Amino acid sequence: MHLLLLTPAPDFAEPFAWAFHVQADALRAEKAMVTARPWTDVGALEPFDAVLPLVAWGYHLRFTEWLQVLDRLERDARRVINPVPLLRWNSDKAYLQELAAAGVPTVPTLSVDHLNEAALAAAYGLLGCDEVVIKPAVSGGATGTYRLREGEAARVPGDVHGRPMMIQPFLSSITSTGEYSLILFDGVLSHCVVKRPASGDFRVQPHLGGFTEPCAPPLGAEQLARQALSAAPAEAVYARVDLVEGTDGKLQVIELELVEPALFLAQAPIAAPAFAAAVISAAENARK
Image: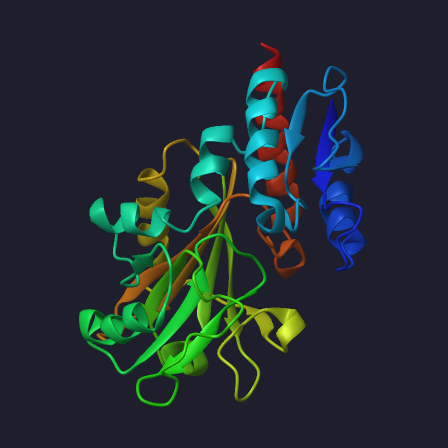
């Protein structure tokens, strides 16, 4: 079994080796061979039983090129894990509106093709709130994500002005209860963590001071995660479903991570073997 893990472009600044080794070590423990290549230069694919974009960080910075790579993988690779239609769908946060249309409880989300002051002003009324979070439709690592209050920040931040953006109500539960992440392999819940931001922030990413700890999934969380994944265009071998409490206290989907999610394999003893088993099983099925 020979697997290709896609890693960032050579000019990507953020260290990634630690993430690659966590996942590669889990796969190697189950006797798989693992090779790393930048997603921008995948090379010949014939030697590999499957390709995984698990560390393809920064694809949002070169999105047109990313979509071209997905087209090539769909055409030339024996198996891509997760499937290319799922990767393509999940690469743009417009999928959140598709989930909502399918009846999945989702954080209310407005999509704006070109964010400007008029669109921002209208969003407060449309969402029925006085504080919003804006984020690029194609993004990663909270880049371009801002929390804005009506009347205090009438102007759109310059780096996202005119860009396709998503607008959501700010949910105070993120800074109190936190954001729950459920990790599933082949649709089976492996483990759950809760992510909380640093004091004074609302973003839960570790490089911004956020921290993570294992927890039991809240009541109804696993059912909601399964419902969200069932609305996706293909079955996920690996998945992370991020949930938050809405203003009514009920859980809502704030994100599905199906491309290169942090899977928090160190947070549960069964996580790494379950991850490896799911990936290897999917790759073996492609051989048949």
